[in-house]
Length: 437
Ligand code: URA
Image (cartoon, rainbow, N blue to C red; front, side):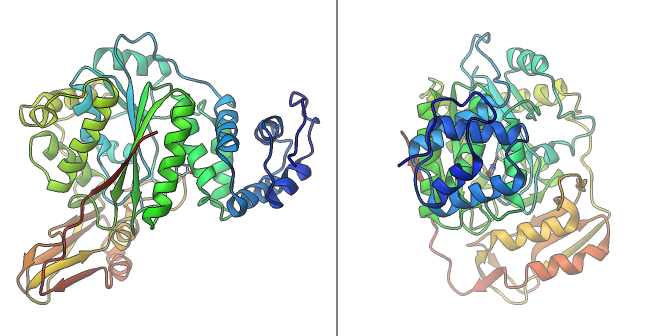
């Protein structure tokens, strides 16, 4: 049996308790009832306690593919849809489920745009141990995250890439629901994560989308099987909505690159755009760029050449300038640093992402509450990665902060987070699987 009604127009056309009971008892909720639930919650008729009970029932009992599609669509319908159809080039976007040291959007957007594809990268700020793209870019003096829809369109036309804040008009139901899930232990439900991410991406109006779904200690999903489920659910949602969607499952057990923070991650991204940078950051940037360009109809281009010959860097500079940033300005530097060294010689066998993410956050690189500021110079510079040989006394990592009093709690977070052994660890592929519709 399903909870249903042919009339979802009136605010009193359904009863929230019936919808909650249906999901509590493992039944499916039909389209009008589900659309009503989202709309009535957004308008304040369904209360927070009722929506909390409903999201908990979803977490425990799940949703089928059609319910997830309807939920996503109802969240899209709660706000505006952007329209890039006036551009004379294909649009392609990337979304990462987030990880420690994940600055890939910064080199990726200009790299892909350097091939004549438009990249609208509407991004968020960090909360907790995973950093936010906008926080990182705000390390650049003058750079402006807030753009109007007209400015976004004009920049996509003239430069080709935009990284900016998603406006409050995109999927407002998701904003309200996400804040509720955050305080009711219901963030982890795959139908809710998938509909939350995809409602914003579909409302953004991109032609195609590449998802970087991370698994491992520094990711949302620790376990590759759950990450795969999430990736498949999101790829199905995008496909059902007419957005060409693929996903890569990528390893987030070790921080990406050597920089964890804000200003230092911008510097590392610029290094990649200059043809250098850590091998794992380059590998993932290139893999995602290939995937994005293939889905935008450019499967055979030489992505590495655009990093080596400065085309991607030129586009980065234009993109930063278009948003009032100075690409040549010095980036903020920390007032205090503290370097931890190896207590013996050997090979680094493990650098665990989550503790290093938490430590960077405690140094001030991230925020605990949405309204808190971040300290752009704060974070961690790693000097080693798994497989590197060290001698006793070699630097392992440097903590960066504006206040040395923060070092103690950051060091507490990384106790046991790295290992020096005798043998090199078996290298595992960074990009583990590709998921298509
Ligand atoms: N990011 C989102 O936008 N929503 C979620 O539910 C989880 C991550």
